[in-house]
Length: 297
Image 1 (cartoon, rainbow, N blue to C red):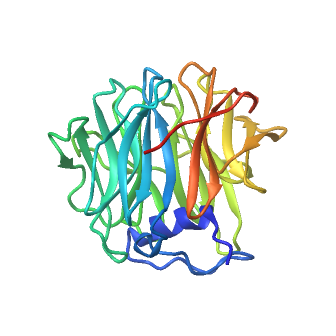
Image 2 (cartoon, helix red, strand yellow):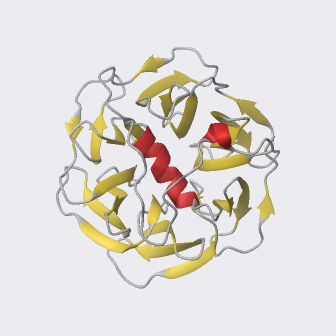
């Protein structure tokens, strides 16, 4: 049976709250648990560029466990940051590149996930919001002041933000559908995210940092910003990545893949390609050309 990489991510987010992934139009209702993955599975789910553009923070499923590791973009040197037994994924860098925030949960499908922050050597690991009720997919703002994330703490799935010390928790906006994967704009004034509807439709949206001015941009998911804040890169139909102007406009295809992010200088894209249960990381030009695959251990 075909396995949807987009549905796998949705299932992981929903499993964070102990909720089973629902059936979706033209997509499988059942998503394999990581523990049931083939023995040779190496599935990269998400990535994030380091602030200096030299490393990528990866969420990697291997031997039934999601771990975080960073890999050098130019030398493919890799260092594991977490090694189980729980699931650690959806990592994001602090602006100074010295810490990461990520989604963590015990090795159980029905265990609620929480957000944790730690230094790159694994020290000073703390829970960001101890009262978590399924927090997932955090993103650290460029000025370091807040971390945005998706959570079930208000029922359903909504976007929240909190300071790195765990204070100042606030809900960002309100709307229909379930809201996933918020990402701060480079200037910190906006958030891009996607809404998932019961009909099976996913829509990339942008809103102001206070939750106002929500506007849909295109059908798709896993959005991210260009460094100049003018365009959104997102995944859509046909296992391809697309761009759309932040103020709306023509959607343009870029390259194959189901997850992508611009480098901080805008000169490269890091792209995840493949399908469950295997995926690969590629570095390409912004137009999708001249690609090379990174070696993932």
